[in-house]
Length: 108
Image (tube, rainbow, N blue to C red; front, side, top):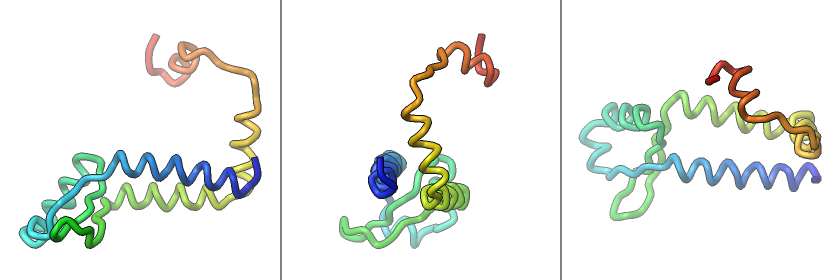
């Protein structure tokens, strides 16, 4: 996989993950209380697209989500990181889920 195709693949994955995290709010809700909307976004783990007449005006993103996005973008701009992903995808060695859970302390 070339650097560009890896970047596009990861971009598509990120886009799909973002769409799953999208919520909506009206401009009236934003005007009534922006802090309330930020709390809603934080508590639901979503970013909120603010709409006026069903047209998007902008996006409210909780700080933690914003920091995670920046971290993801920085990682995706690293050729070394993309090489590691490529190498990992080519590796045929597999670890059973039970072993992974045990090592992570997630179950028996």
